[in-house]
Image (cartoon, rainbow, N blue to C red):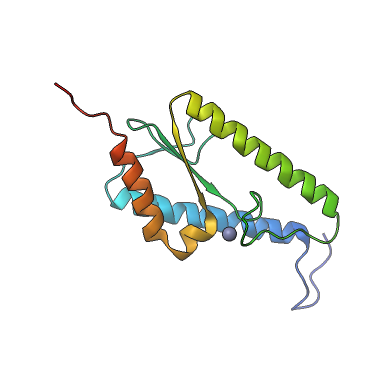
Length: 144
Ligand SMILES: [Zn+2]
């Protein structure tokens, strides 16, 4: 890593990555707190394909909070100018993995909800109600 000299210099790619990652975590924590406060009980990172961020066991709903950079958000993803081919390939691999994970989970009977980090950031209420709605709808019903 180059020494930090200029106050307003551009961040190196790895510094940007580090920021992206820690912001993801903050947003995920924020979402967890909100879900918990609305009475939803989840488990973290279970042993399932793709290791979802949260799962609701009884209703079999798996939640992924997808980072805008890593998962190619149409609104926020940009390719770094340097090593563009490398990043393009990396994104393609990530997207292919996401699709594969979604398929595997759905074969196991799980509903997958993917939310963008910017959705959590901009409208967490919408995300919470989307998750809540799906969890409630999929709760096993007591049938006589
Ligand atoms: Zn985004």
